[in-house]
Length: 378
Image (cartoon, rainbow, N blue to C red):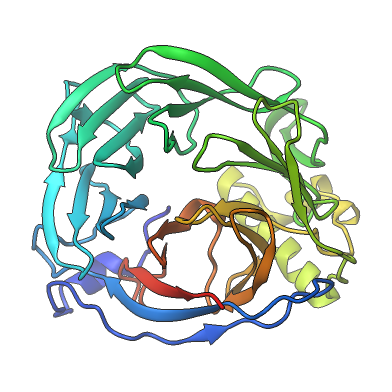
């Protein structure tokens, strides 16, 4: 996540509680369109992790986080990279690991936690590290390079480390036991290709980026290691054990919602500005290369898939800078209800604990903050 430009200037001006858990607002959802018998799921605000300036628990630039069975929160902070642990009341407890290249160190940390084990995937150093949750380094082994996606710890103790998929595959994982022995590979075939905008300087391709609102595939692993696979051109998620079979499906009736013209225009203009800044060219040059006509006029069925602490599936139905809407299914795939929160919660930011959801929502002044919402299901 990029540094907010106002944060450094403002840090010298603030006085904060060491760790504050305070109410910060409340939203609830409504009935899911096309779903039958669904009750509302509520997300109730329950505070935020936010450390005092200069204290060991200060959050400088948190990148990802995970929650264990006790409700302890493990936050990967950067500058330098370290894992900060908070208890279920928000009190800072300890740090785990440190930035470096030796045993128990990491240059970048993507984490998962379960049953007293903390897993660290470091794609920069091509290394997997296993700690216990008291902070003791247990062992490490050579992992996968350069694929920046979260790892998984399954209920049966298996470990899934993401790797760059081969041609024809949309996602792949190497699976190990806790001793670091390679067990197998889970590979999920690609069924649809999302349309891309391709940017060039002269005849040389510089980059490509997915067309906003285009239909795309997503994969999430559940607690048993099964893959939940979906393509957002339809509301049907397939649960697969091998990547090629289907043991059950999750979904509901769905009719594409119109994409408001003003929203479509705003997203297009924002993407043009960002690409122009990234490539250091004028916006007119970008507009010549990114065809607005490729943007759909209806919303996709969903934008991402998450799995909560109880094994339920949360479908990110729609999200923008001010809100995220979810459909919630239980561990058996039955529809539970819909909810909405007044914040942007992309799937890579959603971390579930026992009855809670954590995500990053910075303060109005630009200070990093990880907020907690209690999940109230019927």
